[in-house]
Image (cartoon, rainbow, N blue to C red):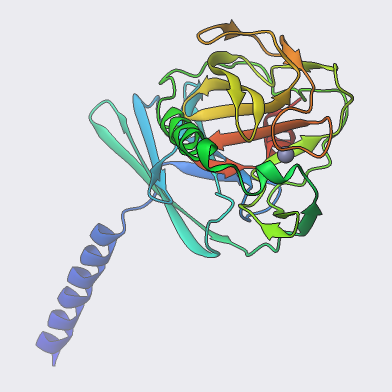
Length: 290
Ligand SMILES: [Zn+2]
C-alpha cells in the first residue's frame, strides 16, 4: 500500500515538472494600453524586465513588432492591429536576454470585431475607372509604397510625442468602406482632416522623408519614416516643401493642404503604417501624443 502511494507521488512530481517546462513562468511583466482591441487600433505594451535586458524581441500577427528601450528595466512595444485583421484570440511572444539569462513572456489578447461604416463619395470618374494608360503607373506606385513599408530605419527617429498635422481635429473616416460613384473600392486606410487649401501641414513627428512627389490616387504625397517600421503618409498636398532624404523634426512644416489626387475637396489625408499594419492615426495621437 505504502509503495503504491510513493509511486503515485513520484509520477505526480514528474507530471508537474513536465508541465512547468512546457510553460515556463513569465520573467517579463507586460502591461497593455489601447483605445480598444479592434482592427485599426494601436496597442502599446510596456515590458518590465527583472534586470537590465540587452535585447527584447516581440512577435505577433506573423510580424516582428517595433520595440524600444525606455529605461534600464522598461521597454515599449508598439503593436498595430491591421484594418483587416480577423477577430479572435492572439498571443504575442516576447523574448529577451539579460547577460546569459533568457527572459520571456506570452501576452494573450482577443481582437474584437469592428463594423466600419460605408461612405458614398462622388469623384472625377477617372479615379474610379482609371484610363488604361494609367494602369502601369498605378501598379508601379502601389508596389513602390509596399516596398517602402519594408525599408524602415532600424533606429527610432522620433523622441517627442506625436502632434496633429493640422489644427483641426480629424473626422476620422478610418476604415470606412468607400464607395466611389457607386463602385466599392478598398477601405479607407487613413484619417481625413478637413482643412482649407493652403493650411500648413506639420510633420506628425520626427523622421526621414522617403517619398515626396505626385502619386495617382494620393496626389502630392509625403511619406515620413519615423523608424522601427512606423511611417506617416500625408496626401493630397497643394505644395510640398520637403525632398527625398530630408530629415524633419516634429511639427516642422512639410507642405500645404490641397485637393490633388482622388478627392472630393481640399483636406489632409494622414495614414500610418506600423510594421505593415494599417493603423488609425487618431489612435496614434491618443496613445503616443501629448
Ligand atoms: Zn482620406
